[in-house]
Structures are given as C-alpha cells and as structure tokens.
Length: 240
Image (cartoon, rainbow, N blue to C red; front, side, top):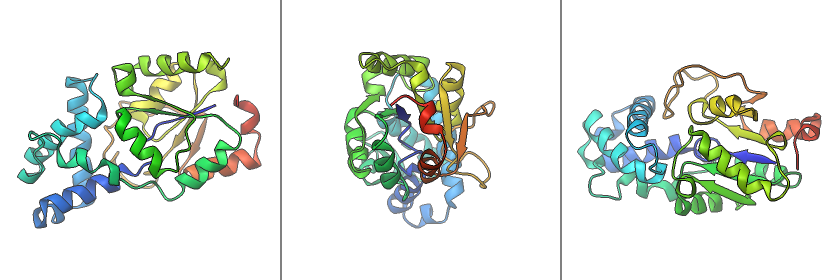
C-alpha cells in the first residue's frame, strides 16, 4: 500500500500560492519574487502550526494569509474576513504534471491512500484534480491533528488494518521532510522522499525541518517512483 502526502507532493501548492498572491495583491504582489512569497509562507505556516496544531491546513490558510499580509505588506491578502484568498484558491491549485499519470500507473498495482493535513472538502477537490486515484483518504479533519503528529499515521494504519495491512506493508510517499518523512521514519515506516525542490535553495513554502531524514527511496518526481516500480523490485518490498 502507498500512502501519499497530497499538498506539495501531488498538488503544486507553491505554484498555487504564488499565483494567488500575485492575482489578489496586483502590482505589489507581482513585484515580489516567487521565492520571497514562498519563504514568507513557510515561516507563517510554521508559526501557525505551533499555535493551532489541530486546525486542518485548509482552515489554517486564513491566519496564514493574515500573517502574509502583514509580513509582505499586502493588505489584500488579509484572511480575517474568512475565508481568505489563499483558502479560496485551493480548488484551483494545479497537479504536478507527472502526478495524475504516475498515480494511475501505481494504482494498477497498489492500494493508494491520501494522508493529508487538508480538510475533507479540499481533499475531495484535489483528488478530482488528480483523477480521483485514491482508495481511501485520511485528513486532519478526520484525526483532529496535523502531521507531523504521529496520531495521523496511527489513525491511518488503524483504518487500513481491517484489510490486514500492517506498518511493514506501507510505503509513505511525501515531499515534506518537516511534515512527513522525518516522523514516518521515526515510526518505522518505509519512506519515499519526492524532493520536488531538488536543485533549488531553501525549503520554499514548507517549513524547514530541524534535520533531514534519510528516506528508503529518493526521487525528484512521482514519475521516477512509478518507473522504478516497473523496473526494479520495489514492488516486491511493499504490500499491495
């Protein structure tokens, strides 16, 4: 079975955030580089995660948007009149170009489960964008906390255990060291790091991790994982 972080691994939230900021803030937003916007978002998310660890990422976008408005001096982004511009933009966030085809290929061999800090409504919207590839989904709204809280992984494993699936049968696939790879490794899961920002400086819109965990598998795209499954014995090491 493969479990997937969705936002940042399958859905290009960085492109969605930059597009939203520039569209809503106009010339002032367009004057900022994409990396400036993303770095400010990553800091704002980290701050908000510490304040409201149980709030789904979707709702967290409202106070994050307010923090961005203050940090970047872009009052049009203010999220106090919920829902914020960032939260409203979720349904338009694009899939990474390789994601729908790779997910469809992987789905022919594996059970696929979304494991996301988004709420249920946003997860359904993003799943449609990806071609509805998932057999199940576990969201922060379901669990009541966000990754990297280990409870998210425990809840997911409990749901899948009724099918006879155990921890050793799971490969967790994610781009975020902060939210996913580090905690999954500590919990004993086999992990695959999709390093979407490979070759780029900084951690973008994702909060920077205290340390970088070494994954079992490491690719820059989901297409590379899909190809590796076809060409190498990875498939034999993961439960279906």
